[in-house]
View 1 (spheres, rainbow, N blue to C red):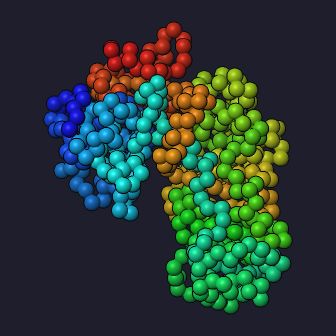
View 2: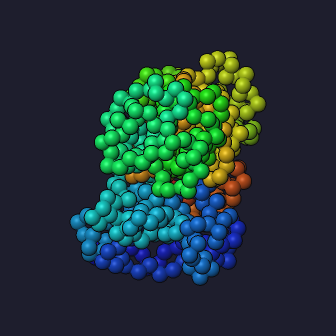
View 3: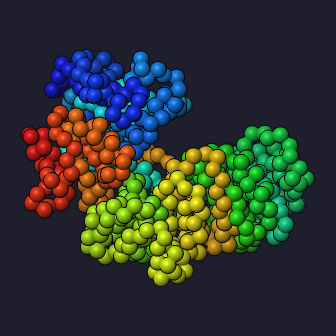
Length: 541
């Protein structure tokens, strides 16, 4: 073991259930012995940890949270906090040479071990502590690690904010399939007029189910390992459900209620292709499946199936020079969507951002208005009631991109109505499953619109954000609103829960007594940003 500034004790906030003010013991954090790392462990110092609205959700759900279903929090308290910046202080013998004391690390908290999902800061101990103990689940072993090196010049608060920014970044990176799955399970349904759509792509599937097939469909699917046929859609849907499908192609006009039922047969990560003219009616969709299950929805009214896979029908990024509407921009994640768009050199030229709360609208203007003007972008902050008139004035043909950052079915349906031809609707709403949402899926083929969404992120997404930070194209400190020491955590949680602060709050566990302090009070010279030098002065008291 190599030792580097490893103290005998550490401090942390245990969560044993209860409300926001029940975190800790007797209203305070806990001090406990800090044992050296075992052979397969690395101990890292938590340099900064940011508060997330997910932390509030976990506290409010307590033992009812799915990640705690097999755990008695009263006997085994959790340590929350999943957005953090780390410095290695001690390395177990099996990690010698791969990690060294003094290494600065970022961390992806959502990890998968033996097919099971875990989250650091929820079911695994997190960053609301002075130190964190990491093992092979996070450090990698034979697999890719969930930690990654970060440059010395980047502030700890910025490193901690990589995680929430990466979740937004993932929404604009390829996050679902845009082609049929090789060797997968395919359902091909032929409806009215479907025989006019040529099947002009290679047959990829291993298993095929044909419904109401014509000769062209039978010939196209003949190379598959197995082909099962059904005479009609209603009879197929009336039969007991078998395994789900990787791809579903609806060729020709299919009634909206049948599209809804067929969508239920699409597996996680599945692709639905609407080929041919569809009835211009709304289709009921479980919106949560689009972003949590990474469903891909493509379509064409062209002569052949291949038209559905043209690159312009599969875009993920915001349209350069276009009009972006962010519905629910005032909350923590909405602010990140807005911040990212404002700093994109090749991003939208006009950004419409809504919030129902006047205080949040003022904060958006104060925090991002000048930045938008400096970057040559038009930023319009709106109440929801002002959106229709503003869209008619500034985007009479509709918005090129609409992002919904609120778990509100009505807002999703409204957002879809603002889409221009070729537009993209991004669902970042955290919708619970089972909430029916009516969407104009016919527009996918007719107008080339795109319905997409995402949830969570990967190490690659964090590194993509970090690359933009180090290149000077994104300053995450522009969204940092307050800082505090370890003892300020309950105040920080309460401020986020009550919406008093919608920007990010960074907790510095090395400082015990620093109260929750707005950044402006620490930067009395009027300067902006938050650097490593600022953090050094903060650490020095």
